[in-house]
Image (tube, rainbow, N blue to C red; front, side, top):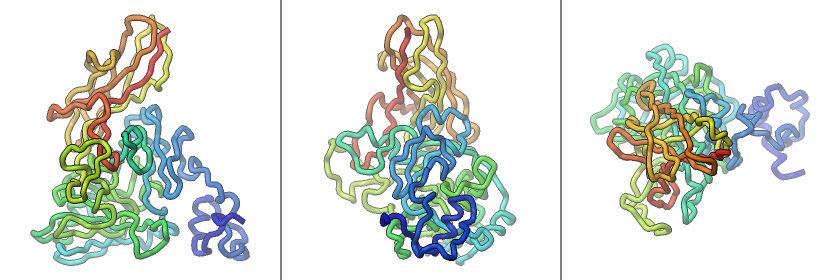
Length: 406
């Protein structure tokens, strides 16, 4: 038997969940044996994802969408990227699920049941954009280590939950509070219970925003297991790693949170520009906060062919971290000239914005359609790769698609 065919019997409940049915005769199944149906998992069936998505890693699972799969104004689960740092938790019992608020800067430690959180605090629904800090990493040269995301590690879903601020006000926060950090139920790849796969957070100013919520529904339904069921933080506009899944505890810190993947070079970029390939000391790396302005053409799919007698209708989304997108443009001459797109207002703060345009082409041949967004501070996307950084974060270069006019 292959080594990967064996697991602990304690995991049987989780395996049954993945199969969708109970394992008959599990009481006589050999110790550590994994059913054949799970020895070569189909991630598309497992996570209910579109087969056009791309698996970058399975230990842990990291799966990205393609641009044309993100055409919906509100992204459905089938097109939402998965970025895990550890193993998805097994045997979740929502009846016993609790959230503890603790840390140096709480007036009192307090624990809530999931039922109590849902009944005690007002519910809010927001459409919020989440993007992996490493989205676009594959374009960096010299190459940056990590999952080689292209353009599909972003989405905007509708989230329902309670404001983190309301819970913290109920607990009582001291004046010296600086940061919050989350702690979750996912399991380290080593299965060492003393190690957290990831424990990130954000300054208290982010925690207190209206749109920073403890979510229990995504697109009107229970959050899928792979996306944080039954409870997660949502902090739109910042790297998606701040939006911790499978939430069990939040610590309110009187220092910048120093959990796993908060220190060193994790989710940090050089405080000052550096040359490609240059080594940067940890002390010279700054934590990523608001994500940069960016856009994505979701229709048509790159490689479209069109008759010269017809006009091309393009559409897509644009977002700008904590800011709003103020202007959206397209170019068909490699950025030599730009034309305006129609740009919609966001559904709410931190939601992406939808754009569209009708394009005419002067003659037959090969073209590229480039998209460029400008934020409310007047900062535009760079046409090509922005400044290099060791971890390949924050690539917000213009998205482009190929079009053939025949």
